[in-house]
Image (tube, rainbow, N blue to C red):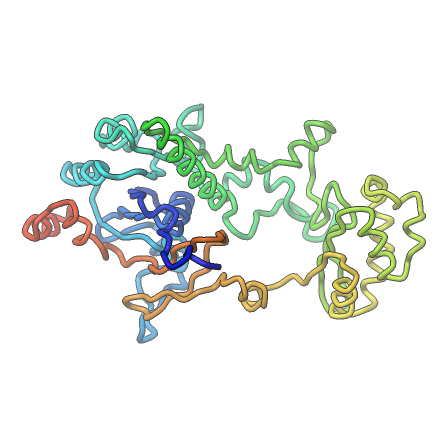
Length: 415
């Protein structure tokens, strides 16, 4: 990957964009981290003395150079790369004035406060757009700015349940371990952050044509309903309530986990031609001619009987045997890796998905990187997640405050 055309280095994609990040926990910070990776100057506003809630969400905590725990939990370290941390008490009039001053030349404000909270502080879109009419203001909440639940708090787990995800995640009720399960990562928070970042970039692009700012309303429940995708359409077209199917795909077969002699693998057969190849690999070419399995639609209808045949075959050999043969034949298959195994995978390492960034206390900090790759520019990821208030003096000096003013604010715990 090159970040040069000829001899001239290209600036980062969003190097001209300043983001004021008033958000905490995950969905909002995930969005601002994406923007920071694209080169935006992200100023993270945190509470004096406490900071983002996720700083204390541990163990594990980041260790300093002496091997002692710092005040920053792994959760915080996963979501705040590339930002500058400023402490400001938004409950004070002086703190609110500082935010307004920061907004005068900001391009974006990100926030995830309860509906109405920032309006009472004079920091909502209606107020700040008077300070800066070009401001793109993104509000991330559980249920949105309108509707009967707008004022209610929400967390990822709750939205996974309310938004239908847990109803289709987990083993069937009639099998061991059956019952609803949440996804093992906070998928709604993370996806909401991606949608928020996309909305911000779209609004900035529109602003280049109109000069106008925008208020973006992103709701976690809306995002999760959108993520129902094929499962929602299965219901809308088939009028059957989607159910949990374990690792088996509801529309495509065979596509699930298979138990080998020494562990599990996943096989993903996506079409009839791949099924025919699979049958050759397992020594059962006649299955292709069986009317029950000749097409994907028939395989879905007759999954139970097909499962019994395949389960017996795969249980007879170790994982390495089957993975080697399936790879050679071109049938998509792979192991169920642990997180350490993922990070050691040669493909993951080749793509540079794990890096270590310099850190003022720990020496360096590991980071799982942004997955976007571009032909002519690189994502910018050279700044570790910040210490609490690490950049307060720097940012306030840029605002024009004197050392005496900054020290006065510090004494009064405004910053």
